[in-house]
Length: 53
Image (tube, rainbow, N blue to C red):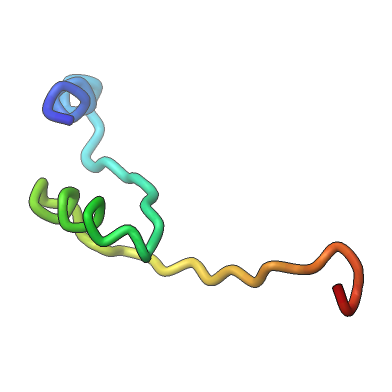
């Protein structure tokens, strides 16, 4: 992660983004310790292949 962050700074980026599942508490805690914070919330509705399935 540190190498990726250093590379992004060298390229002139001012932020990193990543995706983690809301229920993945261990990953969320890990990324929060690295300074990542929540910015957006995506809601998803699974659709069955056929109605009533």
